[in-house]
Image 1 (spheres, rainbow, N blue to C red):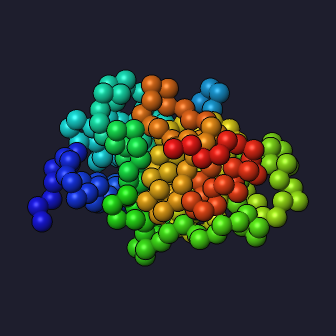
Image 2 (image 1 turned 90 degrees about the vertical axis):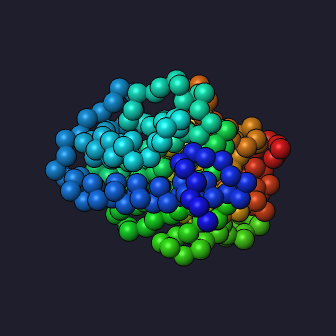
Length: 275
């Protein structure tokens, strides 16, 4: 079979498969860059109104920007100035070069490199690498998801009783998860939202939700993985997520197996699933 050119459209999904190979190569290059940039040797700065940023964030952003976008494709990254021309692009890369910088600096192994591909506002392929744990999650809607090279899927859980739910470490620290104290599920705080979504996609946790807004680059890759693994992702309003918006900021979201979605929405008091 002839490999399509980057960004081309085919009816059998080979464009997504080709994109996935590009994602894998870019993640490998990013991990190699990070090997030479140990966190304890880096200068840490703080962005106004945001969290920390390091030389590692910028170095990984540079290598991803060099390897990923092909002609005619858009680019959206936490560490790049937003270019409004992406709004006219059918395919857009939504990237967080280092999601969980606070954990990276603190030596907590809950950070990752996150690369998502959007088509017509939908996340269709993604890759997440956690160099601290050696984990790599890859997937697209056409092929499903792999975890360290092996096929993976979301869990088959239908009830929150006994479920493992991943929470934002920052939200827990602020007391926003106190309302779930005594709930019939286990809450585990984890740093990076992208990493949490990847763990749900691989069936290593049952669900995650965030109670505060997130940027598109935070979640694009993870949402693509959850969807490719047979799961569902919904906004606070109960609707599917749409990406590549003029303001790339999303309301809170939930991610879980499809069969668990009604229970999650009831627990949160959010509107039921909307098609």
